[in-house]
Length: 255
Ligand code: PGA
Image (cartoon, rainbow, N blue to C red):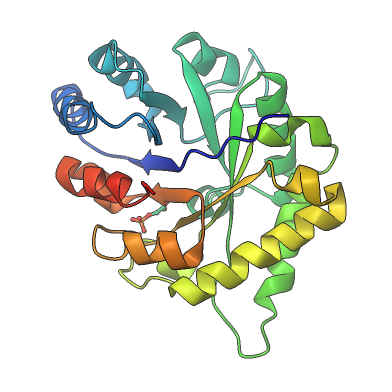
């Protein structure tokens, strides 16, 4: 089985920007800056109402992949306000973020994350599963919180589907705060996540899962986090709204 080793950088635009025009401008800016970069997988996850605008303005660009920030696991039905995976797929979405702390805060449980992950894999898309601790305590209880998040998210996920799984370690205290985890903390967590995956699936299969970091990544800290944190890439919020800075983060993941 071929293991995907290209770095992965995901732009999580959250509820930004405000208008369709701004979406087109932002997408074109990123596309232009990244046109020569074909060795990093770059995913843009816009608000779902703007998926089509991103799809159209990235046009022929092969290295800008479409993502979604969330999706409903059912295909169709009476789910007011929701957008299904199948609908996202119809617009070309390939990666779906699940279990982001901002969604967990709005009621997404570990069990719901698992239901969504299974649906994402069934839809032949890639699940970006966010895990992270609220805060760090001296006795390091947060490791068991992360372990529970990962084990529950992956219930009934067969090892044959692990190439479609990305774990995004996003310590909640680092999201949007300017407080980043240190590269050592990130490396330690990467090893811990790999150990959990190895326990469940065996070492060889565990290596199919990409592990990325998110939480105040910017163009200053990206290189050290990538190199010393030894992650496969990043999930970027705030800095992904600035094309030049985002492009510099992407470049920081090139070997
Ligand atoms: P941030 O957000 O880069 O603005 O901290 C990351 C995220 O929430 O995915």
